[in-house]
Image 1: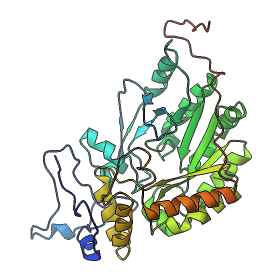
Image 2 (image 1 turned 30 degrees about the vertical axis):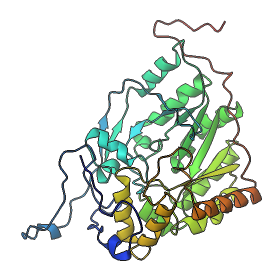
Image 3 (image 1 turned 60 degrees about the vertical axis):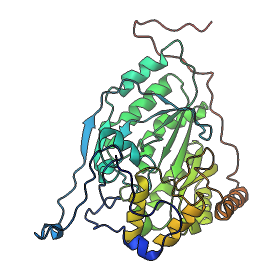
Image 4 (image 1 turned 60 degrees about the horizontal axis):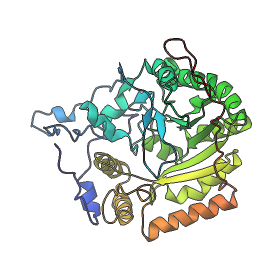
Length: 377
């Protein structure tokens, strides 16, 4: 098992320390710099110059592969007290958006793959998911609560255009009046307004749109295959105009990188019809630490040490603190300052309203596999 990371795991770091974690950047249009070994592997593989000159050769094109996954269940439940939902459906594992900061990257280690380039190029999908959903909703023991669709990896990543799994899930949920929430940074969700708008009118749907920056260059580097900032704002407007409640998620906030844009992000979201807003501080669990450190050293060498030191100040001197409620906010003076800035801006822009509650009383379960309807007595 991998036991170490490139930077010392605690305390302050210097500019020279950060320069030492740099990797050769080879794959255009990808977020991660490297493909480091996952934490469950017995061997750690690192590229080095063996004197034969091959290290200078251009890397081949990194192709995206798609593998069907035989899932046993489709609804995943959680008991995390600092998360606003208790169940999710994730149509895909891995995400071609390639967001370097994605907290879901370390989950690829369970497949024996890397949280780096593997996460954004080796994707898995669940072709039996719609049938599993019908079966699970029809169980007599099922208690309806809103399902969060695509919370681990984006349900509207590019492959959804072809596979249409997310749309199929929405069709099932709509047919049975099951409440749903979504979070995306893709403009593709506009395709499904014809389903989401009628659901929202019945009090069954709300959508979160993630906006991290208004700077196109930063967006291309940080989220290389996600929608451009202006397209996300257009998406907020299109959803809001259709009567769908939209939450603008300024997440993640990265100190000294996109943090200065916090108020501007909220103003742009409000101008385009968002009804409420939220934020999450950058989280760096497991292998994600090295991935983000490498990315900072490559693209922002002059600021890397400052960003890492600020993050560690908000995590008690560490890269990550998994304690409930603190993991998404941090602690200390800088974390409190960000929280105050967010609260004041949200209040001024009227984005501090409670999120609309979704109805559960309209739910009608599918038929059971034997063709029987469940009786509500």
